[in-house]
Length: 419
Image (cartoon, rainbow, N blue to C red; front, side, top):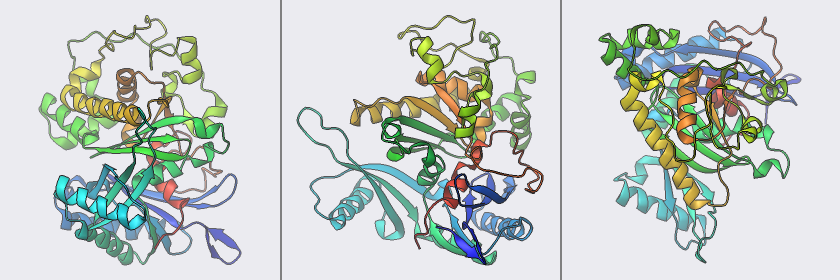
């Protein structure tokens, strides 16, 4: 649905209340959609640990971005920051109505997670796992957000004179940004794991076609890697973050591991970037390329031997820089893959798609893909949009390059109002 001003029907403004950055985007719906306006700003690190100060800073940023961003209208859809979101798979017994399902979810939250459901806004995504050994399983993905956090987000929007017409979980929004890729019955058979690596959390979402069948929130992400680098270099967090962004960590850190040989460049296929998926800096082969390698390895240098199924992934320089948080993140992602395979044994994950601001670090994504041993690509949600790079005013976004961090914001602008 789009909201109109005169004869032009614009989408609501999609607002991604990220941990590290606030992002706003608006489109003119169509096939393909047209980019109307976008704006973003970093959230100052000094407000990260102070919720009240953070709300004030974000409200001020939001008001400023709306004022100078060229957006049309005041209606908006937003996500709730992952800091306040709980994502949990919940097994469901016999349930004949939605009310029965909600009662079981409430019981699970109260008894298993020590969370009081009355203080949360709870939504769920039903999934139907494959029957195993004659027994059927039923699960839902529970997404719960503290009511106070919801009201705080509404208040921040109100201060910017916006009317919130919908709220969607980040899990749903990031998948919505790529829904156009799953139009046919054949497309619906594709199984993809989206890995959105942000500042404070990593979201792992598995889809069968456009349908979400697994979701997990992992509390290991960019900030954890930055803290590890800060400790290793003996510098402040802000300085370590700057070096990570600028790619300077390897100039000062020399871990005692064998360096991976330089990868020979592979040509990027235009039809894949147009669809929203790009090779990771032309270095990670996609599924078609993996078929030539027997499909047994997610990433490899062109002059490296293909590892066997029992051979551990090769070490890279990133191991020495961020060994502890990387080990935690990879362990959680491997658990996620195994959990998914346990409920859908006949539908293996065919491809990884990296999203989020941290996916700009190519070596990080390569390392994860090697560890999971699944073909990987970089997601670019803005690739499909028609846009005039000279007219779109955004100081820190280069629309000529992939923008994997914009999946949630774009997905929100494509979503339906639900308030």
